[in-house]
Image (cartoon, rainbow, N blue to C red):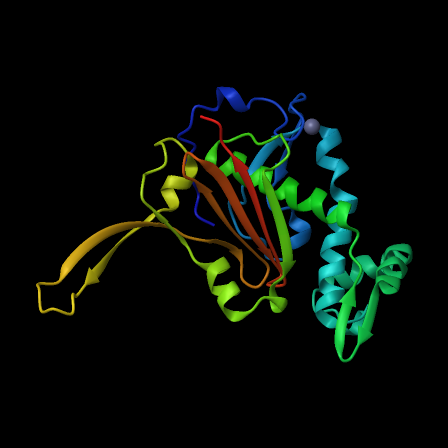
Length: 246
Ligand SMILES: [Zn+2]
């Protein structure tokens, strides 16, 4: 990944970004359980206390394994495409059994009963990490909205909507890392009435692809809200929004 300079005034984000406690470790966002070797260079890191850093790992393991099993429709190790996940399932039979019992196949469709609190815990953690690293925003409170669904279950137009990059009308405050990812592009508008074509400069805040088919996210701060979209394993799509009260 591109190495970004931190241009922000980070005096406000001292301490663990999750709980506000003492910063004792650096936590990768995304956590490496969602990525495979070779890991991308310059993975974003945020400050965390040891308790938070370790506290999410079982839930993250659960989500990473659940997604792979959901994709293959079973907990059969030979059908799991990510070696790391097959290895974890092999070493933790209790987790494997728990996921196994959550999967059912009806009319050729895989149904999974998800442990919602664990899923929410992981998505919020990841979203808070992206908000802190990309946007220099601390979002410890409950989000204003939170949704997730399986990408394959979305209709084509829902997917297009979800996948669209964010066209920036107002530049984010200079200072966040996010601005270094912006792409300035030109759109040529050719009116039908024969008038001269007009060229508009637009700034596009696009998805950050951490690893192909593994993990991507979009972090938006338009001064009204913080919006974080995350797609894991091209299977789980999620969106977390914090409304800002400026
Ligand atoms: Zn903490």
